[in-house]
Image (cartoon, rainbow, N blue to C red; front, side, top):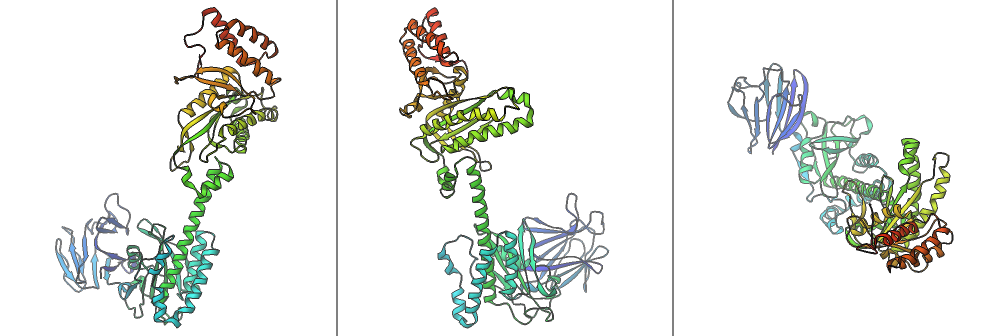
Length: 608
């Protein structure tokens, strides 16, 4: 026996009651310690504060108590000044140690009396042989619960109760919708199924146990829990019970209790998160089962209830986590892909992928934000980004991020998409088609229309969660991403809506109208890249524009500057605002005046 009970009285008033293990130090409050009567954990020794700091008749370190292996009590007076009164014996002088039998009463200070006893809950304490099953364990582990053994020994007694228990387990598991509902049903099952007089659910909060639900019909007063029994359940992860037929101890927490049973509520890791705790009451007038001892079968039934609660809570937690994950996924992915990822989360692991990355930047954002103010800017940008995002999802893309007035999207991961370049370009054209609609919708607020520039690059990346375990952010890393951002920046110089890299254009096919506009070197990248424009936004005579421009570009690349100049001059009479033609003509004129550049025909972009 390694546990003892302690009651502390101030005069005739009980101020503390508990069951304790191991070495206990008792004394007055020290600086920075909590108020009396707090029990502190200090390694292998517990410390009980029994007086406030101003109570000078009790030392800060007054008494050390230890329960010996022979069940005798060892008392040491730690004070150098104060005595400890021993009822029926000589006082324990400062620095002295004595051995006593339990129960023992001590006097400290002016009015405090301490009563140490062997708790009734330690007598006749039984446990099931096996550790309680955790939620989600293998079905093969079910044999470790010796239910079969119990019913083979007493088949008539147990068969009906087992069937009833399983029916109630189904009710607890299937009908409960919240954790509180599980706790309520578990407490009622402890009474209706196991035949207890009270039931409660305790949840662990550090070293403390909080009662979150209790049920005791018929006016029965629920007593404090047995800390010893609770500690045994926590330590061994088993169901414990005390038949307790002849309870006669004076410990307050057990004075009117005939018997106790406690079963652990485990999490999926096998840790004790809670306890289903029940009692049968000794007083016949109040007890539902005044003469029946708690049996091993009762303990098994209560453990079944506790297992149902644990499994139900694990299910709720799993469903809640899946729901949060699904909502999180649907912020980035299509609903179909989100459902697929929910059942195949390994797809989100970092991997190499061939993708197309899109950057879209709103033109005129700063001007609009300054004019309409922060509140309306939020409403406007939410509408714009929401509309553009729908275009991404409509074409099976992944929303990677929103960065101020910029949107980033990707195709080709986490799900492989062989046609990722085509999907990205279809989404880009769809976005551009939405701009006139958005401008019309906000025309009464905006002083001038806004526009959109989109850059797309295709190639290899490393795709995965670029965020953390706290904030999910699925996206790509690599040169392809940086290049897509630079290409989007190039739309400002060429005054184009959509520009893609040569790698993207090569994957599109003949059904996309496009024109090669330049070979450029972007900022912080050494290798030149071909830029290809997708004419969109209802450009008049776009096929002719693309044909004639590419002829002029070819002449420029072949150093036929006069021929290129003549073609571009003619072209601009029909397409005055064509940005690529204006840029190319200025380069042609420069080459005619100063000669071709050293890296002709590559153009170094002025900026990002």
